Image 1 (spheres, rainbow, N blue to C red):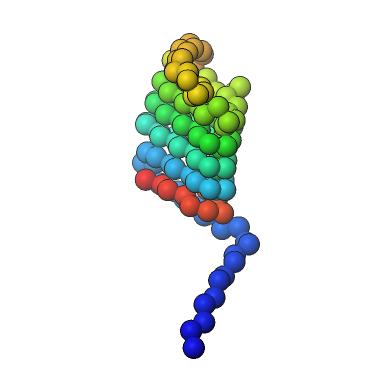
Image 2: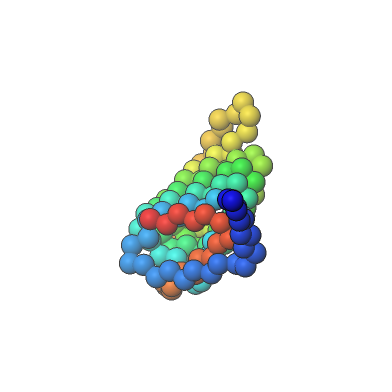
Length: 140
């Protein structure tokens, strides 16, 4: 006789990560990722997919942000350069995000328009990172 078992886990997995050189974060499914204080990096690639959410307070030389599918992100802080690509059904709040140069593209069916915005630049301090997830989370 062969038995099969399916284990359904409903508890949230909380992961604290402290790193010297964080370069990329990819979140999928219903993952939720956030910084606790300033997330400081020379070059950061953030990719949110499916229904993933993110809340980041950045201090970066260059920030590349991609918000795909139904993902949601609240980005604040500063970057010298920023490249942002947002899917039509995704949500991105950058009201408190400042950069010397920002290239932002909203991807809609049949459109490839790109807008460039110049904004103010502000320096702040660094803190540790707090990451938590219910699903897949890629960190490199």
